[in-house]
Image (cartoon, rainbow, N blue to C red; front, side, top):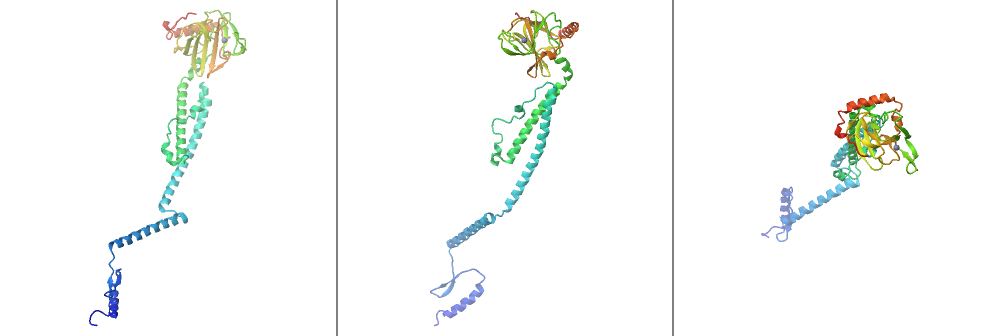
Length: 358
Ligand SMILES: [Zn+2]
């Protein structure tokens, strides 16, 4: 038995070799021919597959772990915790902003109320309609960039609320501008508001035929609102402006008011002088109380010659009797007319005094 190695000897040798080789992870397999343990050489392919399967196993384990962590135990990832905290901060900031806006809205509502019921009222200005005050933004969806936040998100609601507040504030600010402008003319109110008769107060020259209010229509006979005050007189009686203002319109109509003048006195007041024979003034002219507007006549829808005189306050007809003093001495009236004529020579130039055929 001089050749080869006995089995027992081989085992001993392997055992001794193992002692020194143990720390390495090399694999051994027995060679059936030599009966020797030899290092098992693993191919690169199988090593790669081994690595791949282990990696996939680890990834799968990660998923299972993630699922258990978040879904089964309901725990949060650190990143989620940070984001949630940041989100809570933003929400509380929006809520603080909402409370501040609430205060602004309440202050603005107080200003709007005082504006409509006091300031605008004093100067005869109409209230600003709720449609104008509460008008939103029409047209394209200006909030489309917030669509990702959902149709009713806090951010969207806050943004819309802020826009409305801004717009309302703008409307209010414009209203104060108007009041500021008109208040500078507050001293003129007394001379602008209609306060005298449109005719010289000589009752031998006219007859008061029809007061303001419901009456039987002189043409149709049916009950109808008479929106003015009638002074019957032969054509040609001079007609005077009853307050300072600007000529708003001069019309020459075959029917209705016939030849008529409307004066805008400001502070919510307007007056109309209808059925005139001739008109001396033109649209846009400034006019003083007591200045001559033309002559009374019987143009338009009339049954006889007369002056139909109307007073309007904030677009509604009011009783002219409350805006004129028919007991004013005619001398005083004549003096006022004389003064007004002297002042008006600056304004009324001959070419504007157009006498209309009647
Ligand atoms: Zn009338």
